[in-house]
Image (cartoon, rainbow, N blue to C red; front, side):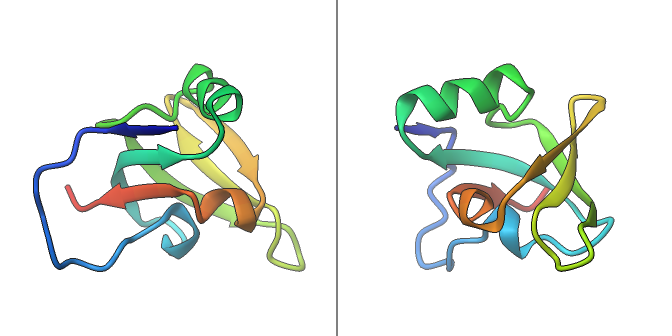
Length: 88
């Protein structure tokens, strides 16, 4: 499933949630995951056009905690690589 609010920024390399550095914030652009999983993430606050920031990670670096919609959600890197961002 691809949920998109793209602004036509062609030629820019994709930037994903997995690329976000600690305490960095960006806007969620779209999710490229199976529909049921994408809908569950949306229920947790991962909505296109909403801000998301990186909090901290487990000692090995995976999973990683992200702040979204007033909560903290832990996601594995393999999932975060399918959640695309755009700059504010």
